[in-house]
Amino acid sequence: MPIIRPAVMLFDDRRDAGRQLARVLSHLRGQDVVVLGLPRGGVPVAFEVARELDAELDVIVVRKLGVPFQPELGMGAIGEDGVRVINGDVVAAAGVTEAQIADVEGSERVELERRARRFRDDRPRLDLTDRVAVIVDDGIATGSTARVACQIARAHGATRVVLAVPVAPPDWTGRIGPDADELVALHTPHPFWAIGQFYRDFSQTSDDEVVACLARSHAPVGWIE
Image (tube, rainbow, N blue to C red; front, side, top):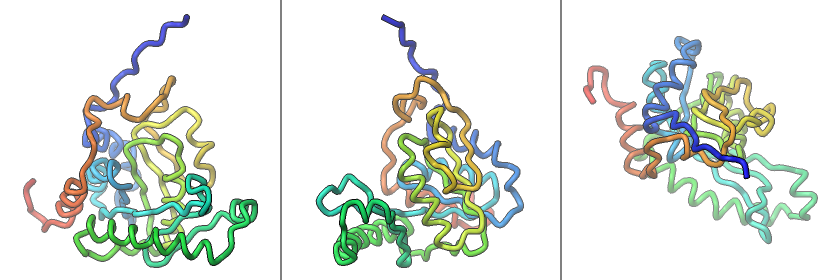
């Protein structure tokens, strides 16, 4: 049998990953950038990127719309402010009606709005119109959530979408396709089983940690961590 060696730990934790990622995104400094962390684990990474780029930080909250009789199959996704992205091919193949889509969207939107309020502490969503949206997660596995986030950011008016992660599978760019204008991954190791294998500390990020990151990013100039 072949010998499978343990993966090399690339990052101490998400904050370390964010600092490393920020260094390769320095070309974006000075542009009209909004850094968008995918809750929950992507937010501590995004916080470090936003701090290095001197950019605003927000979360991008998305919810998958699953086919009613096969919820694991995504037929689209929703974002805030009524944004909806529908995969017409899946809808047609599954025979889903507009009424069924509306029912699924209604229930998912309740949860989306709850999470958005919880994470932002009732602050409004940052406007992405004519801005560069840098979407950050702690890593890519399947890429499905990241793809949806890119689509949602563009639907919110972003003129350029950058998807940036510390670690991803070797074939990750093919999974994302044209949904992002720029794709950045620090490492694409092989073998790749799970994102957490490349972190020394990959403990779950709590809602409170997400709220704290966003609160620190909105703190007055001169605030000391």
